Image (cartoon, rainbow, N blue to C red; front, side):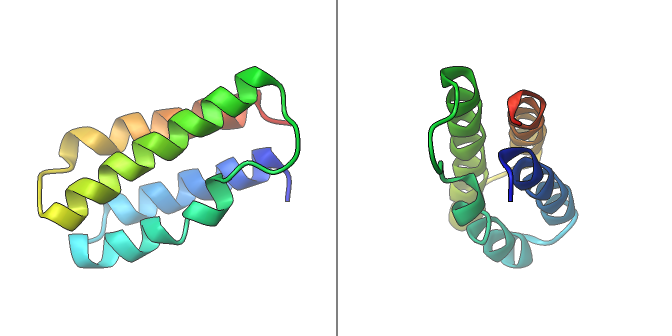
Length: 89
């Protein structure tokens, strides 16, 4: 699977998880960890975008785990994944 395909899958999963209650959304985010890990060498810009997406997803996951509000966290996570997708090959 290419980075672009991984990013597209992550975007779809984030959008789906956003609509779910926290107890269902958290496992969905946990499943994304393997997709957001880097494989092979990519241009620095792509690696930075991938890392940003990973960190944004982690922020949502932490908030879900702690029972904190996530409304303001979904859009930045999706935007970070979209940026990753736009830069990936």
